[in-house]
Amino acid sequence: MKAFTRFKRCIGQGNLWLYVVSILNKKGPLHGYAIIQELRRLGFDISSVYGYVLLKRMVADGVLQEREEGGRKVYVPTEEALEKFRKALDEMQNLVRLLS
Image (tube, rainbow, N blue to C red; front, side, top):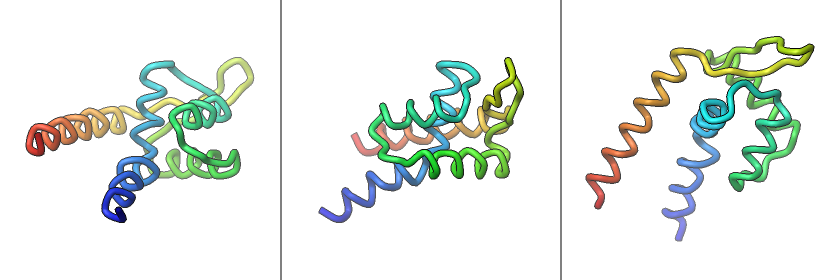
């Protein structure tokens, strides 16, 4: 059914920032390849190139910050992203309550 496919795309690939912020909340600062690997473990079939483009876009959009740790670039969510993440979770919980 096309409607279900659109739904999956919207809550999945269309909102990867939610998954990246969640990963970083659980695991702490990570380098790009580790984030990409975690997204793949969650079932997202993304290339390394797309993963790095996504991370750069998230930095440009103010979702992530790049930091230097141990000679490697790692990513952390911004305070604004954490706030929006919490609001998004609340919205999803409200939606589940409305639809249940």
